[in-house]
Length: 86
Image (cartoon, rainbow, N blue to C red):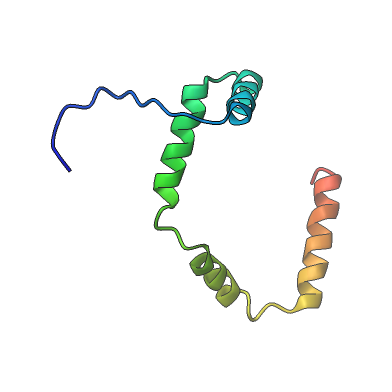
C-alpha cells in the first residue's frame, strides 16, 4: 500500500433501495447516513477475525455439567422474580 495522505472521504455507490433504507434508518435513529456507514465499517473491522464458534464452544464447555431440570427451574424462578420486581 502506498503511503499518502488520506482526506477521510469515500464515495460509495449503492442501489436506490439501499440508499432509501439507509436514509430511513438514519432519520428514525437521529443519525446521519455517514454515521451508519462508519458504524458498519467499524463493526466489520472488529468482526473480521471473530470466530463465533469459539464463543459457542467456550459456553458449551462451561455448561456441560448443568442439569437440564435445574436449569429450567432456575430460569423460571428468574422470570418470576423479574415479573414481580425482585
